[in-house]
Each structure stands twice: as C-alpha cells, then as structure tokens.
Image (cartoon, rainbow over all chains, first blue to last red; front, side):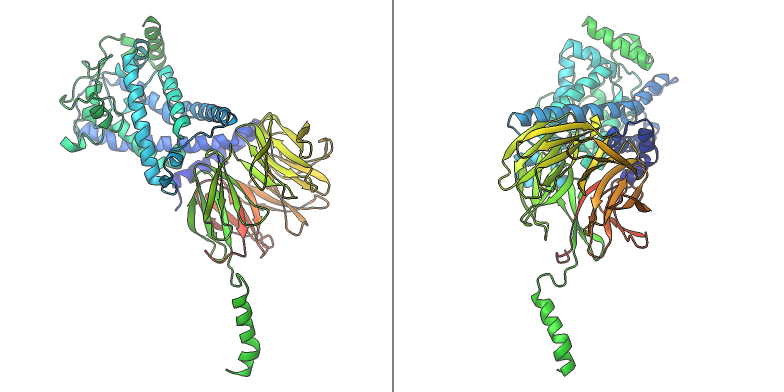
Length: 305
Length: 317
C-alpha cells in the first residue's frame, strides 16, 4: 500500500530539494534531506491533524476564555519551528551524526549497540508490537527526563518557560527553551544508543503519539473517564501538571502519553479539576515575551539558579 | 493417446517436469531502506507478494560466492541478514558494523563492506566473516568495486570528493585521489575505473594504477550509479537529479539513449527478457524498463527502495 505522505515527501525532495542541493553543490546532504523531507511532511500533517481535532474541542468546551490571545501566537511559532521547520533539520543531522559516531566508537571497542529486537528476539518480524514496546520504553524515559527537569534548579529554570504559559492550548506542547530541547535531544540519543530507536519506520504511530501530547495541553474540559484517565494522558490530567500550584520542583503528572509512570512512581494526582495554569515565580517575559525574549529570559533564569 | 501427443507433447511435459524450476517465474528482492523490509516480488505478475522484515535500514544486497545466500546490509541495524536466494527465508543475522555497500571480490576470497556513516572500509574473510582489516577513511565510503584480479578494491569517498584504492594483498591503502563532486557509484570497465559523480553531470574515467582522471563523460545531472549489462556491451548510468537512466556503449562510452525514469533512479538488475529493474527511491516503486520501447511498468514496493536483486530461476513466490 502506498504511503501518500512518503510520496509527497519524495515529490518535494525530487522537485525542490535535489535541484537546490545540486545547484548549491550540497548533494552530499541528499540522503539526509530525503529523511528530513519525510520528517517535515509528517510534522506538517501533525500540525494539521492537531489543529483539525483540537481546535473544535477548545471551542466546544473551553476551560478558559481570553480576550487577548497574543501569547498563543508565540506557541504557534514554537510548534511550526519544532515540527516542520529548522529544528527537525538540525535534530536530524545532529542525531544522525552523533548516533553514528557513537555507535561506531562502541563497535570499534568490540560491542554492537543492542536493540530491543536483540534483547527480545521474538519481536523480529513483528513491527507493531516492537514499536509499542519502544514507545513504552521511550515514554518511561521521557517521564524521568521530565521529572528530573523539575528537580534541578538550573534545569527547572529552563523548563519553566514551558510552564510560564497562562493561556495554555494545544499549541503549547512545543513551547520549550532551546537548551531544554537540546538536553532532551541528548537524553533521547542516549536511549537510542541503549536500545536503538526506529521512529521513521513508524511515522503514523509517531504521529498519533505526538497528537496525544498536543491534545494533553488543549484548553478544553475533556477527560477520558475513570479508567481512560489511567490509560492515556488527558487534557485534564496534564493540566494539573501545568497548574500554578504544581509549577516548580514539587509537581505531579509528569507523563507524556501514559499515566502509568506517575501511578507507579507515586506522582499521579487525579483529583485536580481544570486548574489555572502558569508559573507565578517566573518573570513576565517568560509568559508573554516574544520567542527571543522568552529564550533570553530562560537563559537568565538558568544562570541565576 | 495419439502418436502426435506421444511424440511431441509427452517429451516436453516430461522434460519440463524433470528440469529444476522449469516453470520458474522469477523473484525480485527489493530492499526498502526506509520501511526496514525486503519486498519479495513476483517477476512475472510484477507485483509484491510479501515482505521480509529487516531490523532498521537495508540498503544493498549481494549474492554469496556459493550462491546459497543473499547478504543484505542493514546499516542502522548494524547487521547483515542472510536470506535464501530462492525463497527469501531468513537464514541468519550476523552483527556487522554499519554495512552500507558490500561486495565479494571476484575470486570469492573477501567480502568488503563500506560503513558510510562510520568512515570505515572493512575487509572480511568471505568464508568465515572474520574481519581481516579495517581501513579508517576520510570520509563516507559509498560504493565499491574490484579489479578483476581481486588485488585492489576501489571505494568512492562521498563527502571528500575522492576515490580510494586499497591493496587487498598487502592490506594497505594504495592511493586516495580527487575524482569529482560527491562520488557515488564506481565500476571497473575495460581496464579503467569509472566513477559517477552525484554532485555533477558526469562520470569520471580514472587510471586504476594512479587514480588520475583521464576523461569525463557527461551523462546527466546527479550521476549516481553504474551497471554493466550481462552481455557487457552496454553501460547503464542512473542520474539522480536529472531523473534519467542512460545507456552508453561500453567500449566507446558514447551515449546510446536517454530514458526518463522519475522518482530517483538508483540500483539496477537485469532480467533475462532484456528488461531492466530499477529502484526509484522517492516513488516507492520499481521501474521495469523495456530498453527497446523506452516504456516502463511499475511495481509498488516499500519506502525508499534501494538495492535490488533478481533471481529469474526461482519459482513464483
């Protein structure tokens, strides 16, 4: 079965990227550009899908109404930058270069980097269960990255940019300090080294997971019921994490996709109902500044921490 | 039973029944580099019938010297998958660092593996897969070929615009010479080394003893891979940026014909009926080109199909 998004990425690559690379003498980046095109097309699809599903939800049952939504516009910029713009390109190139170099260094020392399929050979030939297991492991790793980002003062100073938003919407998922993103990249790279990561093999499933993360930030009174709340992170569950009382080093509900980690590690709080979001301890620029002002404010806060 | 049937039809039926693969339809193996799989294609029906899962990113494929195994290099998976060349059944998976392009020396003694992302050229004992030598190169070794006497391996170094030669007798580097922008495919032809320079529109012709460029043959933008037809009369070149496949007279290197094959034409294998099976990297398809008419049929496969290998003697899958 054809993958229309892969074909679209191929068309973009062949029609625009290759002529550009050829004309500028950069054909050595041709293979990576193909991967980035696919990444960017799926990123654009993620944004479109999230917009199509989350916007009606936010209009149907909003938690808050705001007369001025200027602060949301910056979050839209973060999203586009993160999912279809420069960041995927940088991440893609960096990730590729760092991973292959480290993998090679490890191999040179007589050790082949493992994969989950090596650890559990039964997974060979069963891509969907493999992906689900990868997603579970990565979600657990992300829980701990997120939880630690609240523990260390300097890290929280960076991460507080994400929490500063008082007008939290589905656009807020990618609102991060660039250094915080870099740390996440290193974290993710370390996990990739430990177990291997096959995300581009499963772009549609990645798309679903990213959608859940965006939805969890939506300004909407949506929850998944007593059982559903414990299976998938809902807007209600994650909003408690963004609450003004939860901002800082003693927070709750750190999970991105699966609440199970919060339940197991005793940080789950299912009692809070659609709380007010934001971080009162941060300077105003973190909440309402431009992208650049927010980045500078985050850096200042980290240096003071 | 009529005499005509006894004399004409019966011997044919007996002969075909007793000949191995007499009614063979052929199987094509196509490596889907971004779907982590190998498509098994019925060559007669020209349709994919099933997929073999790879681990991460299979790129190139080669038949073992004894003909018993296909070796499929899985770069990001750091392994070579061995598969039955008739059925596609996976025989085993061997851990190998970053196997991108791989080939056996003509004498069947060595398996040379280029680690494109790892800047390494590894020489293995073909029989045991024990590593004999690792050459660290600068940088991104892409494709490789050998001298007919198996004494030298030639490797394109994509990011440094160079061609390297390695002495497989002494296991030492011989020379590294500039060859052109972003070199990819390389082939030994009539005592010369030909290199497709993807960052340009030409194939460089070099002296295998020194690596010095002797000539440049313009084939089209993004010259990428080179394949010699089984009868050794025609050299085929795929041009990545131009989206063309070009036939050249193997003796004179004059262009015979240019075929439009959109979708990033990459690897080629040749079917006994004269058709060329060409992977189209950006189109999730294989083009089956009739060089006589210039028309091509398409076979749907997975994402970013790269390596291809045909077994026309295999029974229909």
